[in-house]
Length: 330
Image (cartoon, rainbow, N blue to C red):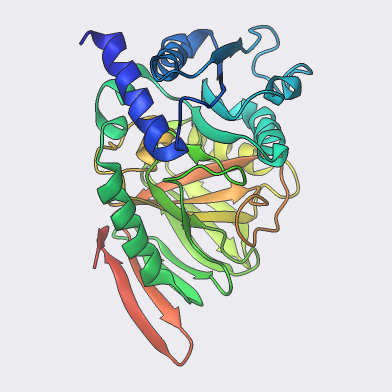
């Protein structure tokens, strides 16, 4: 197969396994100039399966988009599957959250969300995996957190963080439903920790948002779920993070704990792939209203990735066990 045929085959395989695609589905592919080849791969893959497909190209003027173009909601009227193969610009998060909300509230659309996807992800790595085995890994790891009241996270880089998980369940992103979409590539379990129950220090040694891998570790201090300090040797990066944290009143609030489990994912500059990699985890701040139990409102949601975590989970009755050590599930 040539490169485009390989990409289309990977796209179709992901849509079948993650979105339960059937030939009767009516597919909408949202794409833009920078990701047009990826958009075409999803379109070609769906067409080869017998699905009618329409493609919507995001307008290039007024980028980065801060709001959803007025014509987009009507595109869902006769659609059952949406693929967002678009750039991963952090400044477009308000638009993306608005669009996701419209999709998930439609009541009839399954979504594959791919902000920041590139051709390499579709040719190799995280899009060419054994989805059945990855599902087994996700279920095993979620079971280890079942009924947890708290988790303590530590890393050799300096993370020392306690999260309240009371009544907050983990879910995975390996199946898209009409209620909750999935990333493509997929491969993580995640939850919304209690918004007022995060205390300690998170040290970022991977990537964050759409910035890429940090040049030096960044320490983020939390008190009762709020970011109260950001420090590091790279003043420019610290300034960027503080600026993102000040987007609105909810952007400093903890929103997510995610754990990567895609065996094909690699530590790259793109969060879409890096956050799915083995031996990584990430904390997000901002919106989590779409997560089970999530209560925080914000126009932003940004992930901060750290590597090789050790996680000790606490249950009622003074029971605890280590579910991950140096990034490896135990």
